[in-house]
Amino acid sequence: MDYALVRTLHISCATLSIALFATRGGMQLAGWNWRRWHWLRWLPHVNDTLLLGAAVTLALISHQYPLQQPWLTAKVVALVVYVGLGAMALRAGASALRQRLAYAASLATVAYIVGVAVTRSASLGLF
Image (cartoon, rainbow, N blue to C red; front, side, top):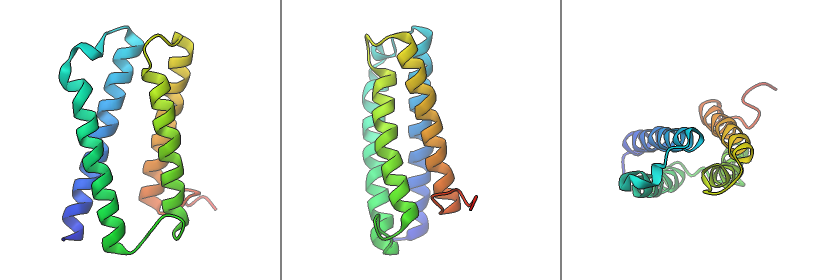
């Protein structure tokens, strides 16, 4: 499998994943029922499955694995935090304040994930 091709797929899926989350979160905070658009319910799951598959493939091709590479470990831990915060932000029936805080925190977390990916440093190259 071609590393560059899989990397491009991974970056494209990550970009789409972030855009879809930001769109659904923005609609949620604006009080729009994004769940009525069928594609906004299933497309993120399909895309995130491709994203995860590309991530695993990249790890296998490059022989870089979480717990072996600190920056990959940081990405995986931050990903778990991002998913949890994202679920809180998009949860129907949660208070508006809780949704806003979770949405802001999830966007900050995904920004950290992207920063770690670009710098290949858990500290974002700051120290």
